Length: 309
Image (tube, rainbow, N blue to C red; front, side):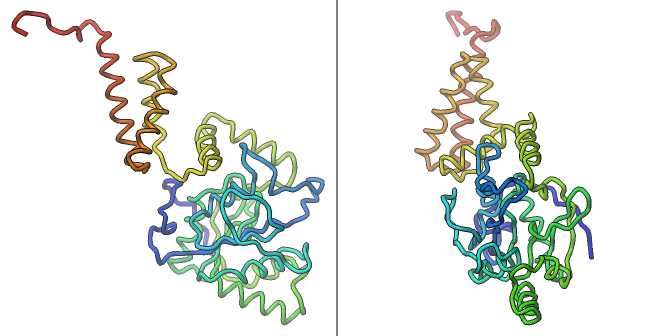
């Protein structure tokens, strides 16, 4: 058993997969059909944190999966998924996992619970990378107390299927069996990540997640991510460039110029193709204009009016 720290790097992923390699495709299975007894039986996947349902937050983290299977009764989601259900419903995590795996074909599968408010692309990539470089059967996160979190993990699909088949042969069915019956038989690598492994089992957990998202260091990224989900935009924009532009427009022209200028930049970028480069180029031009505008207010920027100028 090996323990790794999560890798550094940006949260966004290339379209072809976490490594940018079309051959690195993976599937995802999200278990979202639990009873949420510690929340009084509320629909936990639908509880909103930072304006988005917990399930949608998890689905965004694995948005580049080739196939995403959600094991639960169907509901509206921010992105298309395949729906599955264990029989009988409420049969426990092993039965739910087996139901989800029936719809997967990739050699690697990310298995997630639907109550992970801080899970992101970076963590999913961090789970898959060691699996693709020799980890035996799977890679899972551990929480702040060092406990295994098998529902924040990446596995070799074949290892899961073999383990589930062995348990079915031994017990006749998977209903009611604890997840550790499966994971205890696998050779697993551990990654310590107390933030990404934080799950919402109680209302106190949900209150903690909501408070953290509103902290100064997180709120802007969370807001931008929520807006992109709400508008159906999947564009990785350099928010720092836009914030600098808004600052220059507000200080060099007038305060209302900031939101109007960033709107016009977005409109111009959309007409130019709408990709990251188009946004950056439109922002660059507008920022240069804002700085030229501001320069005209300084004494040493007054035009030379001599006859021979």
